[in-house]
Image (tube, rainbow, N blue to C red; front, side):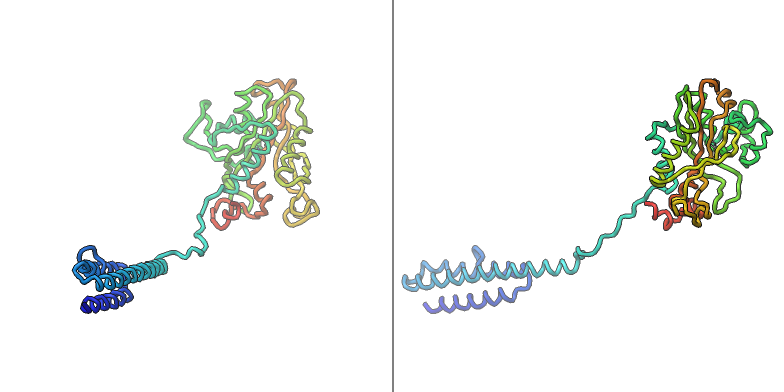
Length: 351
Ligand code: PHE
């Protein structure tokens, strides 16, 4: 029955041709269904006619039909794979990111340089066993001045250019003020704690000053206070030398010069050897080799008496570190205003 053989030949040629022409996996499935479908498939149907053929043809046609079936199956499988990989390549090239591109950096915030320096200063003294104390920014005249041995009309009050809160008065009727230094925290602490006392008190202070490269109406200090039996200037010098070396490097030196603050006696101005030129003299230290860094001294007996401590038994030292001054020196910043403008190009350098 040559008719069946012709039929088979045609199916074979057509099905392979259609397979190679198929442009999508869906079109391939259609070819599969058309020739190999379980009921309607053309090859399937042809194979179903085998039992009705004479035995010699049946065998021959059966062999060829099965061959055609296997050839088509493998052609379909091969084509399917190539279509799928082509489709994948296309999708990737159209939609996928270039994984080799550098990532978009995540913008992270950081601590403000003044915060960092303040924390660093406090940490040095914490390692020496000092506790951290704090006081309010709005203070009484008594804590800010009188208890710190500035009697009313004392001329040193004028040097502080105080902001007064005219409509807010303390219990004695004196106007409240914005603290001009962190020293009132000394008073608050000594009134509420018994020696031995070792504290640092960081915070904001206010003075009615014109803003320029080295002045601002609000700035930061870290107050230090040690009250114990037998405290001397040597203890102060030891603590400040350690502070200078931790902040500015192991070879930093400190130098004491006589100065005046009403609440200490003697009053001392502390210089630190210039970290930029190691004391040889440069622009930063104005060729002196030293940079004025803080005020300090031994707690005045009047102050101790005022908070109920016996100056015959206890003595103490105090210091006030200017945070801006330390930050400027540490980072070589020559204009304090940069710290307050919050230009990210400046701030970013300290992250
Ligand atoms: N409070 C002083 C000031 O702001 C600094 C200081 C603190 C001086 C402690 C001596 C002792 O100028």
